[in-house]
Image (tube, rainbow, N blue to C red; front, side, top):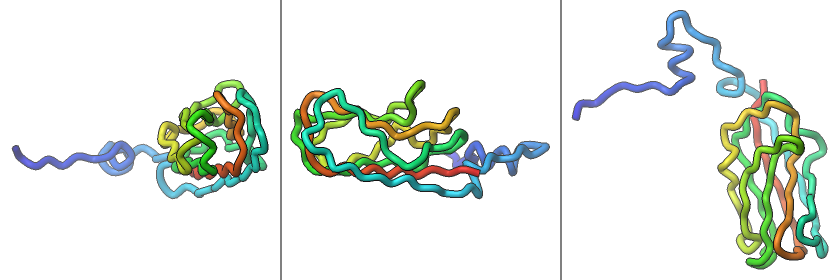
Length: 139
């Protein structure tokens, strides 16, 4: 099979297409921002919500990294993390037994409205430290 030259979408827009198309700042030369927050859960019951971050992830932000790290809280404890309230983009449902979860379901998403990071607990009462780290790119 012969080798071929292929190009990513953004490369094609700026270097192959005639006339060239502007590439959004969230794909190249954007500013990276980070939201980090920590919560010490003490007997938090199932179906509780925990909201993280001092401010919302802004409209137009492209998510580039999303992690939740927590103490081992038992296999019965589970959670779902979403970015947003009214129309949330759900990142993942996961067990509270493992200590670090890389939430890849939202990578590359561009938010259409400002949103908080919201965790919803399920299945068991939990206690322990929960840390959330969200990285995004904006203009």
